[in-house]
Length: 193
Ligand code: HEM
Image 1 (cartoon, helix red, strand yellow):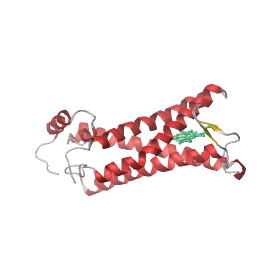
Image 2 (cartoon, rainbow, N blue to C red):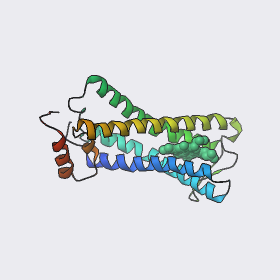
Image 3 (spheres, rainbow, N blue to C red):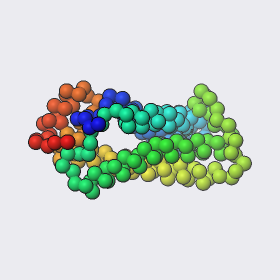
Image 4 (cartoon, helix red, strand yellow):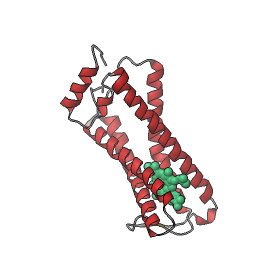
């Protein structure tokens, strides 16, 4: 069913998961700057926890998306643009699954059991497979692909907000509905969904 903006659960899942992905990515940038030691182990473990949160929220998010209300394609957008947006969104969903799963494989192939920030330990049960390097490269590749897709996604949102001014950016805004739709109305004149 089409609506003027995403449902509240949809908006909450979007921003919680966006924050978790960015913190997980940022954590690894920090970890790479740290020398081997307890601080690095804690940062990498926290990074993995954030990734596991993304994985745990994915199914509820997809269900909320499929069962709840959501707006249709951007008003007046050409077909190629609608297809690109759909492809980018599907790629983001796929990466929210594949990136954490590949991270789990990196942890399972480690030389020692993996410390999840002191909360739990993942066994290194796949250590003997010799796949550590390969899965680590896959995890890094998927993380870079996720980052590139997020950059494209944010660029598209800014394009809608400041060039098209069609109210599309406000549809995922955490602001209350009336404020968001007021800003959407300011941007849209005479469009229909
Ligand atoms: C949103 C999810 C995630 C993002 C964005 C992400 C991102 C990254 C990035 C950018 C790196 C550095 C890759 C490199 O340059 O070598 C990395 C490494 C790693 N990630 Fe993730 N990751 C995610 C989820 C996970 C999960 C769920 C786990 C495990 C449960 C995990 C475990 C690891 C491990 C063990 C490393 C290697 C750390 C080291 O070098 O010792 N990641 N991740």
